Length: 392
Image (cartoon, rainbow, N blue to C red; front, side, top):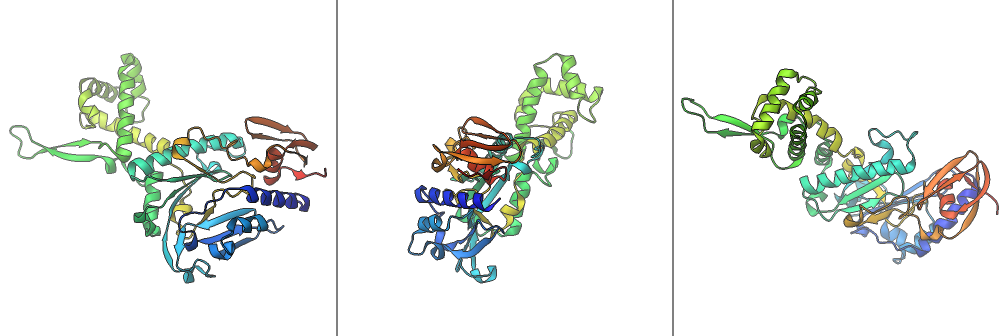
């Protein structure tokens, strides 16, 4: 990025901060604050308290004057957030933060997928994450934030999570990722009365109605409904697609599904060994397809710096934006976070190599050379390093 481009973006970021509505996180005075400048050599300025930056309370004025490239606050809360070393800050507790990055998702190739395609896949992963946090952990009142760049952040600020250390947070990460969970871990074993002539009780294995067990139970239930809705030959062929299930076990599983539908609906996977085998195989698919591929270091790091909602992402020019839970379905990351400051103007940019920008429902094919584009598209291209500012 050349000097002309940096100077232009820095100025326009300042214009954004003069008109933006910013709301700091709870306990802002207990958090460390940092920012990245527009210097040629990227510089992170950190170890500041909110009062250091806000002065007489004019934090918005600070941002409008400093015009930073990125703005961050800490998940951690401290006695002295402006201390120059972490050991001197006096840790009080930390928000539990989850981060999803579009270009780190399994199956997403950043070199092949468009920015919009990656963000769409990331939104799907976000819904999976929210399902786990809300259904399995009982977390509510979550703060959901579009990062302005590659994905989403989710903040949990309940009192009972603030004091969790790195090890406990790592356990939560493992659960969300589905790491180290075996099928036997989610199966409940219950003693049942033995039949006449038996000296010891029998046992029944079931999938409880919660967590990864519930997801596996629902997947098994849907699969069995699918089997019973098709011709027997097709059902048997479908079963034999599973590794380790041959003709004999497929017939046994189909018969068990046909004759024990009510028991299976109650989560009983012990109606026949073949059904237990099918459930175990489906569990692997459930973990793979419904896990949330979060960025582990963000959640386990109790001193992590995270982006400030309302600030701009220096790599896109898009706004870091809070999203209400009930508005998430309709949220469009290629339209909603485009700052009003950059709408309504045309600017000249130079593109060294043809590129495409998709924003606000439009696709801009930017040819090599100098061209006039809507400012928001030009800012996006410049911030991502695909263009430079041309003279007007």
